Structures are given as structure tokens and as C-alpha cells.
Length: 324
Image 1 (tube, rainbow, N blue to C red):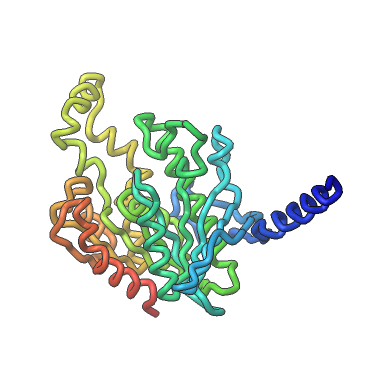
Image 2 (image 1 turned 120 degrees about the vertical axis):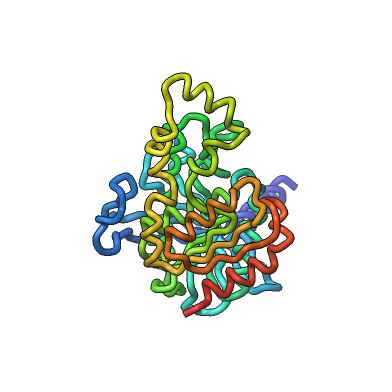
């Protein structure tokens, strides 16, 4: 009986090992496209090589989409070890390609279901989607930690935004290196906070030729400094000698409006709410004006009410990334 137990345990161990997902290890190279004179120094990245890991997470047989876990090192080393590995989910369409490739970014405090839904939708449309976790999101945040990308600690927030932009430039290189991806049809999109990061990254990465800003815009200080909800903090800040101009100077490096002119070289689609109470409509208008007045679609809704128009928004998004 004992030897039978040993044999059974041996075959059980073999079956468990066989069930483990196969990890595909690879290497890719980030190489900046052309001159970086239009890119602020904080967002520049020199040519370098990266190693990556990819393993199957799940198959979606009804849609023909396969979802993979992807990891690669961040080009920035923060004080939080978990944050120094970039985690992503790659939604690969069925077929050989070549497919357009799009980076997808999440909202501020969601459960990531929206971004996964968008990624599945794109992959079903034969657009490969790479849902990337921004700095201090998901597995990049230590268990039980309150660390977030956005923080009352402005220095932390500025550093996290910079790291996220550089991570996404590297993610662009990962997509470009995939054999099933058309490297000339790369894009990026995000929702709410993710849309600000998408716009900012596209301004720094010319390879991301198509951009979608969903419920976002630019011009933080003009939008929020005089907001009634900021009155209490504004009075304290001004009592200590602060001014609106000083805030604008500090915030400029992370405000998509600062380098919005770079988006004139991209194909930009903005989807905005006429009554948005989180991202005021004037922020979408400001980015639209500064980026060459490209396509903007307005929905009669507030920020959270935009979910009612998700089907329409997805239709616009799919067409935007599939266009030649």
C-alpha cells in the first residue's frame, strides 16, 4: 500500500507540473524613434534591452481570444520592489496577424473589469490589446499597502507618473517586437485617470500613432484650482505663500496640456461627457483645441453616467484603431 501511495503521489506531481502554464521567456529592445528634442528630459529613455516573461492566463473559446500574463522590468527603480516589475495582460486575437496593437489603461479605483472588457472587445475586432498596470496598481502595490499612483504627496505622484510613462514607452517596444503585431499600427487608450496617462505617454512616444482619450483632457490647474471643493485647501496653501501660478508650474510636467501640440502628429479621438462632474468638459475642450481640433464625441452624461454610452464609445474606439 505504501509503494502504491508513493507511485500515486509521483504521478500526481507529474500531472500538476504538466498543468503549470508554460512560461515564454524573451528579450526585446527599446529604441527611441528619431530625435527626442520634443520630449522633456524626465520622459526620455535611452536605447536598452529588456527581458520579458509571458504565460497563458486563460482562453476565451467563444471569442477566439487568448489572454496572457506579461511581465518585464520597469526602467525606473522605485523604493518599492513590487512596483519595479511591470505587469500586463495581453489579449491576442485568433489568427496570424499582423494586427494593430493597443495599450489599454485603467480608471482610478476600479476593479479592472472595464479595461478587461475593452481589451476583449478590441481583440475580438482583431486589435491586439495590452492592458498594462500603471505604477502602484494591482500586483505593483505591496499587499495591505495604501500606496497609490495619485497621492497627497506631490513628489510621490510626480515620480509615479514619470515611471508609468516610461513603463508604457517600454510596453510599446514589447508590442512592436511581437511577430503578430503591425509595428506601424500602434496605439494607446485609457479611461478617466488612464486617459490622462495615455495622452501624456503618446506625447512622449511617437510610435503610438493612434490615441483615444475616454473621459479625460488637460489643464488641471484651470479646472480644479478654483473648484468649490478645493476652497479649504486653497486657503491654507495661499496662506503659506502659494499661488495658482506656482501650482501650474509644478503640475506642468504631468499635465497633458503642456505638450499637447505633440499630439498633432497622432490620430486623436476624444470621448467626453457634456456634464462630467469629475473631469470638467473644459478639460476635454482644452486638450482638443491644443492638439489640433481632431475628432471629439460628446455624450450627454456625467462622469459615471458615461457607462450608458459604452456600446457607442466602443464602436468609435474600434473604428479608430482599425482605420488604416
